[in-house]
Image (cartoon, helix red, strand yellow):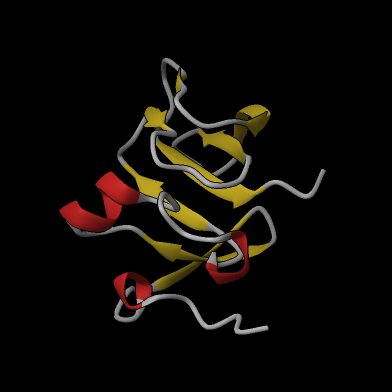
Length: 103
């Protein structure tokens, strides 16, 4: 199984968020797409989207966990197993960590 992330994540910086080494979504394209349109086997361990309080799951092929972070990087709110075609937001969030759902 190929676990290398697709090219849209190739040049991104990494950050540690809640114990996960995640790609940091800094560009418009990767912020808009997130983990959408990827098979689960090609998704990275996590995607950190700074300056974000709302996420859509249009185009998702597998459920994801969303962890909304406060300005210090602490967990503000978590939504597990978010399926496709959803919109989830959390007032006051400074960032969102997208994770492939394990359950």
